[in-house]
Length: 315
Ligand code: SAH
Ligand code: SF4
Image (cartoon, rainbow, N blue to C red; front, side, top):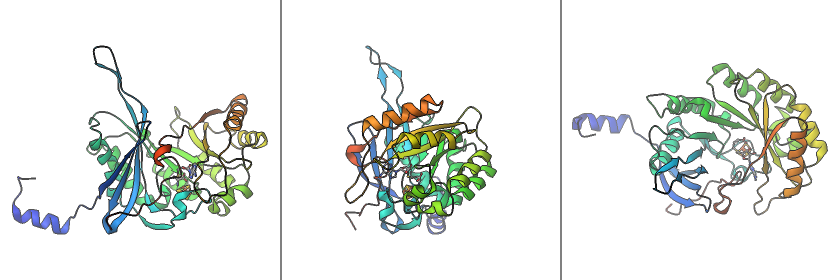
């Protein structure tokens, strides 16, 4: 800003520092997705990913007939406290919460980097590193700034919070009635297996999660997404599929099956395509909407569960 006095600039710099970090690395995937490594104050790093959901389409004259569609996958914490046994982020432990500004900055930087027009809407999923509801106040503040017409003007219905299922916080979020979408990382249909996968399940079990979702104010045109991480020989059987249908009875739900993405040292295995399809068909047969998530950005480790704090080469 050139139109403010020097004294005021000094005061602003000193008393109102803008610590929103910077991009220190970019990696482009073959499928058009781009992974960005952000560095924040203190040298902490998180990743945010631009997922190209649809490529721009042009006619013979070179005019754009259909615009590209983007989803931004945004991080909420450096590391994560939840400690899921299948998640790479969990291996590094928890470092700190991101501030609201640091969360918003991921979205504004990604828009700017990719010359995404001000008026063009993108979808945001809080599915990067961290458990968003464990950083509740900063997350809510970020959502408000991102959705504000004077802010980034991305409607709350285009923003999806993915949570490992902190029922009390789902309830608290529901009371705020922000209009955001909910994605629940369910992953298992019985509490024993779920507790093995997500230790927090001992405090917030499947019943408590389902109850909190039933009370959540959902846009009647939308559904709650249930993410189901499919792990070979653990939860990929038809009995589990049937049980899932029972658990979700009475909820406007859609299920997103996720292939477990293996990484070195994990005891779990990726399921076969055949068992994924069989599982999906069983849910559909019983009347549940079900999709299989394409693993985007697999070649650059930007896919689910592969986001991990990186060591900054310069530090
Ligand atoms: N903490 C939140 C959001 C970040 S994790 C949550 O757990 O929902 C985003 C998604 O990636 C979750 O559904 C999580 O279960 C999934 N995920 C974690 N590790 C994975 C892995 N190794 N393979 C596939 N998906 C994984
Ligand atoms: Fe945290 Fe989500 Fe990973 Fe679990 S899956 S450790 S909640 S980031």
